[in-house]
Image (tube, rainbow, N blue to C red):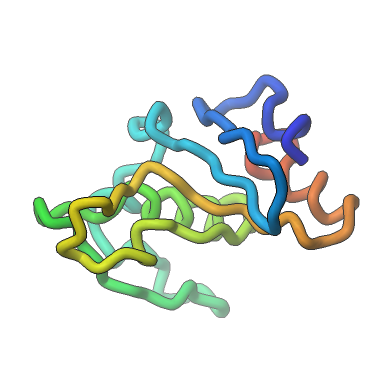
Length: 125
């Protein structure tokens, strides 16, 4: 999956190298401007007629903005049909270690599922 995510992409992402585990971390810092404004600027981004809405979790960073990782994960879920985990939600909102530039991608699926997900993430599906 790491090899797939490192292929040329329409996203400016960096895959964080790891030794083992059930997740791959992706640094999304460079793709901030690629995330559509409707995901970065509001929690009310869904079409009310959508039969399968994404559950809303109105979370903000200390400076009042929507976490970048949450906006990215919502964008990927809605438009590319890939579910990822925003890491900023694992921290206490006032933690000095809280960041919002990393997302987790689960890799404990079949290789076929991993490749399909990676291709959707990088815009090849």
